[in-house]
Image (cartoon, rainbow, N blue to C red):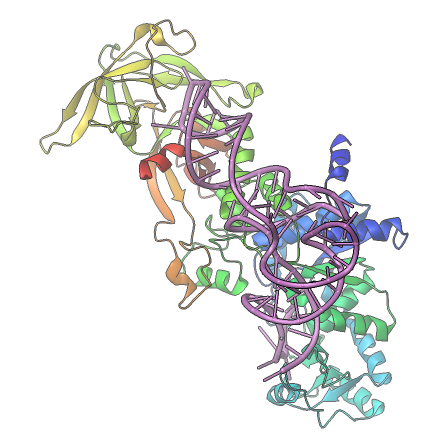
Length: 557
RNA sequence: UGGCCGAUGGUGUAAUGGUAACACAGAACAUUUUGGUUGUUUUAUUCAGGGUUCGAGUCCUUGUCGGCCAACCA
């Protein structure tokens, strides 16, 4: 309740404004929205925006949202996608009022078409698609009437009936609205309403030989469901005139269409066609590859629904073209993960450290907090021994000025354990460093440090004897450029060759018994999430995102 | 040569005729047993011209720039 009150004082976006107006002036008592995916691909970050918008609105205002599959084209649509889409919506945390399909309305839609024919507002056209295209004219020149435009209602009725009966081959006839071939809006130049397709539909099977076009299905479906606010993206603005024309001439419930700008995210692609290409041509492992901007991909990567919803809400809605920084999404992911992720230590590029003054064969148990941001998360045991592993990066024999990790003669703290001093570097015959010898400060143990020794850095580490090898998949952005679709050439030319790097990491033992669904922060490395390919004894972790790294930035300069 | 949208910091949104706000990104400093987190500071006279008004990012007008529209796709 308290949060709802604070939200009310927040400024409204243009859609909320419309809704509040409609509600306060009594146009509606409650609102109905719908999320209308076409089941021909997986949901991506753009759909997630639309989902959060549509469902979010009916969460905030009294009302509900329908899930309606826009399945008017049997050739491209499949049931496989239906289940994936439902799973994604639920994962994002939303539940629809009704699960519906445009194909549920095929009978009603057919009767609507008959009404239009009877009113002399639709006709059967024998023109080919080329001919129809030619009749259309161009945005700057008016079109021409089809030679079949003046058929009588009776004739049209009979022909339309025969189209339905499957008497004509694909493409031989269409049903067109009779509006105005010189209309300034191209969509009003006698748009095609029905086409013949002798194709099996994923739900209606072989019942239909004719299928309605988007424009003849969407608005009417909204109307049948009494959708009050039908939200879609800007490219449908010109369709609104036709949407209203159909509702008006059919005399059915007046749903209203409102358009908002799709949210683009830089360094990513959301064209279904292109995403499909990445999958089919094996640039990624599938629709749920952690590099994909799909909901399934983000889930597998370790993004949380909370982070995605937060991201979408921060962006807001408007009517102008936009391109949101990927870094905002990453910020939202980090912000949520920082609060919930369990801290664990994993070394990805190991360097052996021998603590010469620590007894051989002895194991000392250290305790380390699971999450400093959340005291209720408790702590865990971490074994400390004579031989440990640290990151190669965390040692430099000849460090630059600002480096304050381990180097000869320098002190460093091992997280939750002791301060150590680097005494000696051991090399093999080739001159490669094979181990670094250190000594630990006995009274410097974490939490009971009385040594007075100052350590500039704290490193993550893992006991060599206890380390569990795990597979770690390091993901980075899929595209190197901000807008991969822009300019000449193929968008695939901009794929980041280093978008996936697989390494073996050495993990502290706790990770072997942690819940597989948990989100982790591998200390100083980033956030990680167990991949579904993991098996008992063979753990695989996906890097969700790195930590912010100010040091890396200063090093670059 | 048409119609329809839109234009506010690098990015995304806000300001609803009363003197540009918030977040991200960037920069700097402080704090920190994660170079994480956290805190502080910092970055714009609102596409341009003209008009209305005591007062314009907001209203009007002209222009410029960007996007969308000529699939039997959605």
